[in-house]
View 1: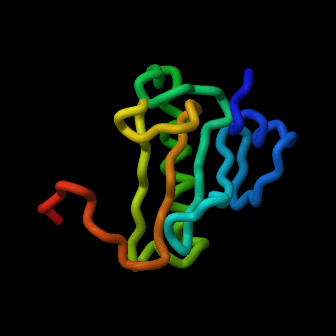
View 2 (view 1 turned 90 degrees about the vertical axis):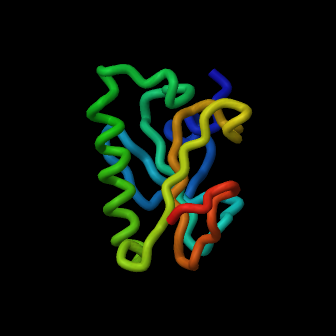
Length: 117
């Protein structure tokens, strides 16, 4: 498999880890879009959110629990942060291994086309 995130999990590509459990890994994004930009991934290779099954419920729950913990540890939980999951090409997905971006550390702008708070 030629998945960059799988290579990060196995340790053949270095990363700056901020969280790791048996099933989830989080590391700093190498091209940050915010002062805090962490990528959170399941260790199981799941290509997209569309490929998540009922059997993956526990790992998805842990992924979001990790996001909550990391936001607190990074000091951005109270001020606020954004979680982003891009799905397939029109959604902006580049790496086909399910991942969530945790972004914060500054006031983030409105999402394109979003007029609601």
